[in-house]
Length: 249
Image (cartoon, rainbow, N blue to C red; front, side):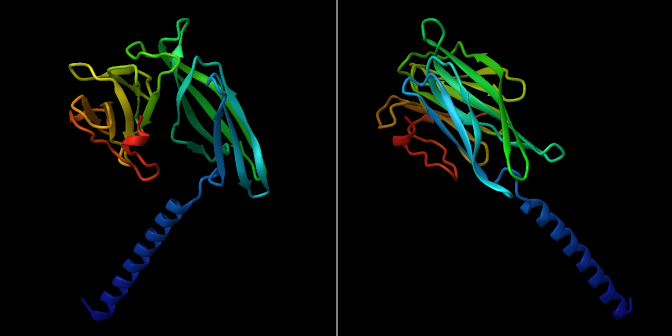
């Protein structure tokens, strides 16, 4: 091959690679249409109602644009948002809001997972927010009461929930909403925390996180499958929120 032809081929290949690289960078760096908005949540003293407010800025405005109230619950024990899904053709962002009621039912000893669908319709200067209840999932293998603590963590496909009055947790498929019991330990040990990492691994902790013989952990993978279990105070951590033993219970 002639030297000048080699140079032309290399130069063309460089341009193609650069074009692909720039295209990939543009796609990755594209800002979400609600990326300048944030949501704060609050509860009343009895945890019967959960309220949220959406504030921030848009290209033509700034401030608070609205929100919603989720109610009634026996006692809202844990709240978690699902991953947002953006529809650029409709200028909407859709996400789930999961509320774990740890004191549901007439006797307030049942546990129920409520799944809400929140849709933000965003223009250059306003965000119109709608929230509807889409699923009510009874979790009969979990025990609750008005003073119970609730725990939730999730990855892309599954949500994990438990209470400190229960000796095992549950795994909920986000798409089908099927519920699977996670199992526990023998002799029974109550759940004391659930934490996830950035790769989708979730750890459910059992027993006293302050030490002692009666404790253990179970690890689940991104696909929801069991990974390992054992005794001790092992847990997963992520890149956005500290997960130390003192903050897991």
